[in-house]
Image 1: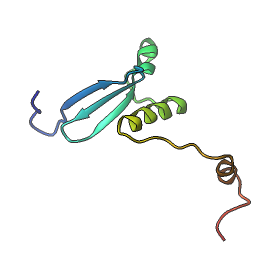
Image 2: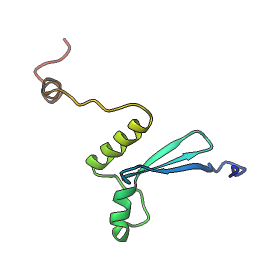
Image 3: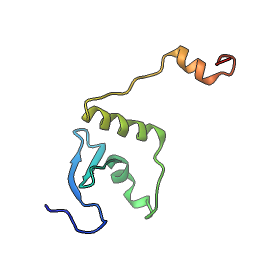
Image 4: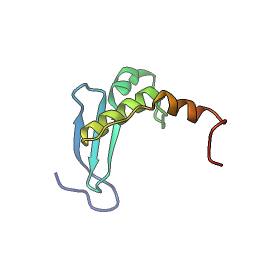
Length: 93
């Protein structure tokens, strides 16, 4: 497939994750986007043509799948880190 001329990015690769939850589209500009394929498929009849904010859990899962595909991963916060981030008692002085 050849790239389109002009300013319109052209998809060069489309991948569906093994668990079928994320669809990654790579463009000839070097950018790639991971989409929540499972969410879209399950809710297709209820979705309008507009921009949607995914539920946090789905967004985090798509990010995890994308990072895993790139050879990375996601760390989880420890209980101490959660407490620190949630409170105002500790901080820089």
